[in-house]
Image 1 (cartoon, rainbow, N blue to C red):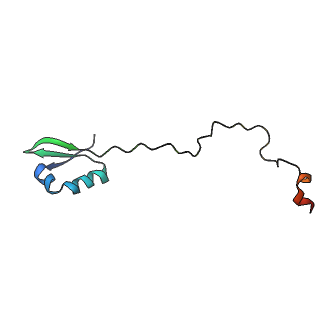
Image 2: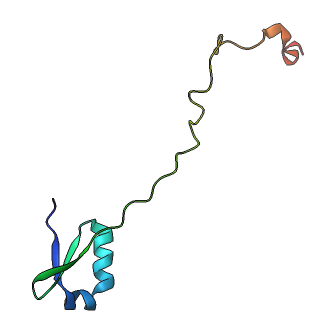
Image 3: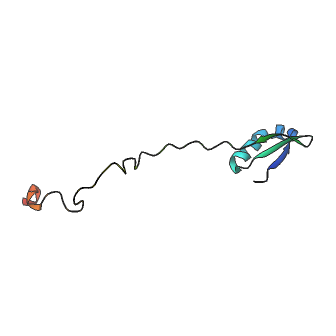
Length: 83
């Protein structure tokens, strides 16, 4: 387990936003104490769930049947080549 930063409640009250920014930035929790006794733990928020990308979503749906390198039709079928 990581070592926590410890801060008194009066210091936390005076620097609350800076403490929250530090926890968010570093990912390290901060222990808030009153008269040396722990009263709260400020933990970083959990990371949001990422949606699965649509890219590659059909990767297991297709099936290759035949040659994918050769042209689909012969050169004699291309009208532009006859001009």
